[in-house]
Structure formats: structure tokens, C-alpha cells
Image (cartoon, rainbow, N blue to C red; front, side, top):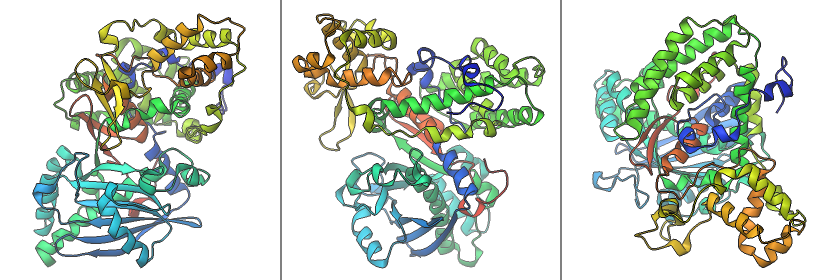
Length: 558
């Protein structure tokens, strides 16, 4: 990561938050999307490289059944979203993972599909897990209508009028995806097959491209159904109103373990964000364009917070705190002395005393927004080649392993795992759906199939074992006698060079909220309007306010 033109790396380092402050679930669960989020990275690349998007195929009948192809051209490559629309009976619509039918199903095809490809995909994509796709497909996805808003928009457009903006603001999407699979799942191309393509090198770019094109499909299908219903009276959706629509998403525990299983990737995400904040804080002065940009970003964050609703008992007070914090922040910015030395650092330091974690993490996002020239290059540092870290250095002495444990896992070694509340849960994989689940150890079977996600306990057990070994002994000798510690030794060796690799909390504790893991990851995607439906699944919105394919060349896209 390169420092800014005005500060050295050592100067910027003074402003970086330590992992001990950043990597606790209570704060991670207050994360907000930033300009480094993956959907923002993709949209900037689309505009910068002049990608071309069109819809060469629209074969949908009067019942809303059929298929469409959305073609995206970038340089010499083409990516095509193949969308299948279904006339789904009301009684079959379900967001649950056990569902077998959806309003629409999708795949992102590597290239431009032939009719034979479309025929093959028609036989498989609507079946989702029950079908099979090939390495020519990069993602597999599905979506259901937001029935009330979908019908409202169709009815209004069919009668020649625009839908109620309040209705759109209340829900924010016409369809919500219930799964977007990639990285080799169900036969799709592996991540390693495409990671060397510059346009896909950043994390989750095929997934973000898939959802962005799905968003275009959701508008096209309501306009199509409006014409079916209203004929010549029907009108298209107003462009400004269209912009307020995103794609909803229902996400559960299946996503939560990802950031635990990919410590190098998690480190790179968090480090890029923290480096960006440090660069902004390290600036000696504030320019007038940056101050103006801060106010624009603050206004946008306030509008988002005001339309963001939730009934969840955890989210309701957090949302109230965020709104209070943004009001206080707005008053403070209006009178802030931006001529003082290090004005951005001073504003940040004020926030750590005056704002809740929700407000502080929102301010992080707001402060980055007007500093694209300073921080956007960090998006190139967020991918990870995890293969080199898989190899364990067996020659490392036991005393060095224990030293790393003490320095990087002191938070874990302080936990008493003999108490029931600290071992209350266990992570396992559902046999039926092959997806992660969380069990209650005291009253559910399955703990014998526990997945190694309890990093704090594994660190504690490793440290206890190492106490019985000579400090000069190579760790390879320990692992010959105790192979169950291989996984944790590998993580310890990763942690010595990746300070943000671990979540500094007990992930099997009774008080742990999985929703915090979900929100942290989803914020890096660029999700907004987090609406937990329990502590284990959440609804969000993606691409709300973003340009559509026919707007990608407009000025002002960031």
C-alpha cells in the first residue's frame, strides 16, 4: 500500500487504529459501506474503462415467463447475465434455503452464450442446487419479488402514472436475491480460473456484476408486465425514481464463517480500510472541495439513516443512536475549525468521545468519501493469494509460537473455557444444504461434528499444549504428537504478519451475535439498510442510488 504524496508511511502509521480496537464484534457489527466497498470498486472500473452494456435478448411472454441476456463488454472480454423469469404461483414463493422455485433465476456466463448454451442453462439454472452448471458460468443466483411493491409498480405504470415514491422508499427494491453463488459452487468456475483477469481481480467482482445486472432486469420485467397489463397506456419508470431502487438480499448464517475461514483476506480488507482512514487523518490541512464533499456525504448518510427501518430489538436502538449521532455530527461539522492543524484527525478524535460505535463507523465512511484521489488505490490491495500461507513453517521454535500467541491472541488466552457460557454454541455444516449452522451445545446434538471456527478456544488449547514443550523444540515435533493443532499453528503463523486476520471475540460464546459477522462482511460488499430478522439472518439493499447500465457514462459517478 503506497502512502499519500504528502505523508510518509511512518507518519501515516501513527494514525492507524490497532487491531485490538477494530476487531471486536461490537464494532465490526456497526460497519458501514465505504468507497472501497466492492460494488463501488466495480462501478468505478465500469466507467473508467468504458464498459458497454446492452440487452440483445428479451424473450419474455405475457405471463412473465421466458429469458433475457444482458451483455457486458470490457476490452476483449464479454460477460453475459442470462436471466430466466418464471410465473411462480404465490404459494411456492419462499426465501428459505429449502425453497425449490423462485420468481427469477440467473447465471453470469463467461462470454456470449449461443442458443445451445441457453438451452442447456434453461434446463439447469432454474433448478439451482438441483441442476448443474459448467466452468463457463461464473455465478448462480436466484431472486423473489417484493410482491407488494412489484404489483404496485406494475399497476401504476400500466395506468400511465408513476408509482408512489413513499412506497418505493419504504421497501427499496423490486426483487431480493436469496442466493448468489460463485467460486466453484455447483460446478461454476473456480476463483483461481479468473483471478488473473484485471477486471475480476478485486474480491467478489463477478458477484457484484451479477447483482448489478439483476437490478436492471428487475426494472425491465416490471415495465414489461406493465405493458402486458396496460398496453399503449403503459409508461416507463421515471429515471430518478428508478435510481432509488436497489436489489434486496436475504442473507443468513451461510455467509458468517467466511471471514473466519479466510484470515488473510479479512486482514487485507480491514487493513485497506484502516489505511484509508489513517491517510485521511494524517492530512495536515483540509481543502475546500474535501470539506464540501464531507457535507454532501454526511447529508447522504443522514437521508439513508432516516429511511432505514427495522423492528429487530438489537437494531432499533443502534439505528436510533446512529440518527442521534448524525444529527450531532452535522451540527459539529457546521462549526468545525478546518483551519486547525490536522483537522481530519481532530474530527475523528472528537468522534471517539462523542459518538457511539455506529456513529464512529459512519463517520469513517463519510470521511473517506471526498478523498478518492487519496484512498481509491487501496482497492487494489484487498484481494489475497491465500495459497502461500497454507504451508506451515515446521522449523519455527515453540518459544516463537508462544510469543506470537501472547502478542496476537492475548484476548483469547484470557477467556475461561471451563464455563458453560463460553462454550455455549458450536458451528456445524448442515447435511441437507451443506451450509453453516449454529447449534446450542447444551440442548442440540451435533457437537461431535463441530467446525473449527472457535478460534479463541483453539488458541487457548494450543497454548496449553505448548507449555509442556521445550521452547527450542521445532513446532513440527509438537505437531507430530498433536496433529489436531495444525490448523491453529497455521493461523498463528499467518497472524504474525497479518494483524487484522482474527476477530477478537469468542465465536462460540452465548452472548455472541452472528449478525455482527454478517454486517461486517456485507459492508465490504457495499450493502445498506441492514434489517436483521433475527440474530442469524438479515435483509439488506445493494446498489440503491447507483447508476443503471444506460447511465454508467454520466459524470459524477464515484
